[in-house]
Length: 112
Image 1 (cartoon, rainbow, N blue to C red):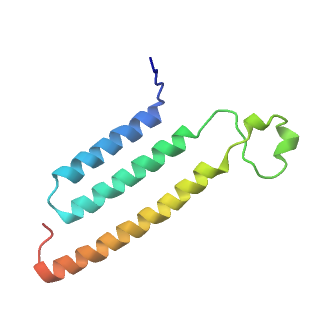
Image 2 (cartoon, rainbow, N blue to C red; image 1 turned 45 degrees about the vertical axis):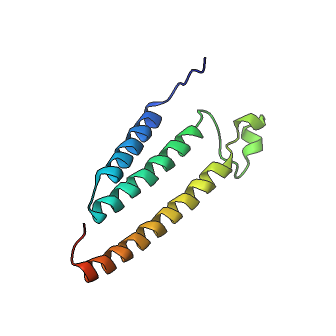
């Protein structure tokens, strides 16, 4: 049997994800949809960053080999780099959604 020990921040991220997903499915308003998509994005980023966290790891910069002789205690920089990329993509998606919202409001005079 697979046992899952989730930390409180991972549980928080999962709850945020499902709140954003539920809100995205049930909302008719475009502004609310943009907000819920942003909540979904942040929940995924928080979840993946929290999965990569371990107590006692050091960043792989500077003289880390002098302070940490075991390579198992060095943090992997790839997840953080991917999450920074995800943040920038999320900001771009939100900006594109806002531009489409402005165009919609100018043409239809409604956000529904």
